Length: 401
Length: 140
Image (tube, rainbow over all chains, first blue to last red; front, side, top):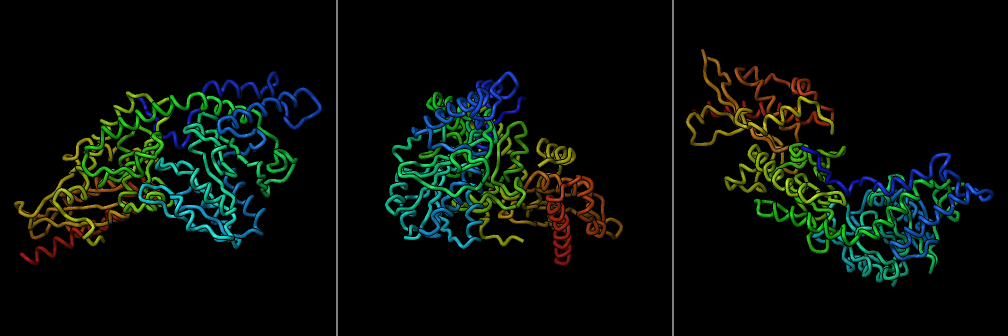
């Protein structure tokens, strides 16, 4: 049996069209020049390609290309946005709002700022994993300098209402940062409709290369950032460092392709998600983590009660998926995202994330339904918890040793 | 998590042929249930629960483990550790069983450091099962 890749939320393969464009920017007969070299054709050619890519990225979200800053990836974009704005506007206040289910690239930056005398409010999602506009409104204060929330959650696929939250944040005069690493190129984003000041992007989540990302920085009204890197003054001084032409061209091409294929991709992903869920929903004790409505279909997180997630992954050995189980992490803690949804720890341990993408085939998903059923049944056969459940024992009433 | 081939093999054998791998249970009402000791360790919230049962017979005045069964909820190495433990137990006296250390399981399965707790759980399960058996005998 072939190995099926259902971990697109982790990373994606680079589209071959993208690879070809990138190849042309490396060797001696290609556009290898430094886009910062203003004195010769090698530099001019590289600059032209970099600017073309910037336009491609800008077009995907309908912004001005001058509002796009290249970074090394969404982690750097998040760092630059949050630290950059928090430091620059620190005289407005030192209160930041984020949520408990952000990516670590946001949470760890906030933890760092807490150690630098900033105060951070971590919003709780509702049971579906949504950060409601009301919860943001309640948490806003006069000294709230920044609100940072994700668009699509990487573990459960739930979509936040960025438009509604943006209006509330704007009214308060705070800066609004959105981590769009999982959403850019997958669902429509029109910056004209959103009161967003800063938005993080990654190339490798959307068939571009790893090691390149971008940050949208609003020009009107202009949002200022304190840079993290100092050096040659590239990217209008916001992010110094020689621009990696091949990476940038790769990201530009990937975003251009995504713009073209978004509707088709989305339709396929919805079909795959439905095949999976319809095939599994009649099993006993199966739960969706997150929601079906208001969620991106490319990320689907389920818990199979009484089966530990890592053992299920091991049983599904030809299928690449990920789990919120502690056993797949170095920390031995189950997923903080699932716990924040109010899921019991055992359901977090029993979770599996399926994330489909552009190269997923319908037949693969159909085969997976049968494999998952078979593996869950086998693991339940050897699970003492399943045995107790079948005997009618209430597991919550047992005092575990 | 890169497991040793031994963990993978043990896990796969257990899944493929659970009966042969001694997956199962003795329950109240079964013949000879009074000669079975049960140990349950771990907690669902921690991601591991191991249930071990040993069946003993008095042979020449000594209680020997003649059969054992298990069920385990947990990661692949917890399931493999339980299976490995079962293989070690059969034919041992209660005393010998209690002397099995988790390190033996670690060595056989080549468990990585982060999975050592699985073998500790297995060791605890024996102690619980033996204690349970002893308490039953006193009640006979």
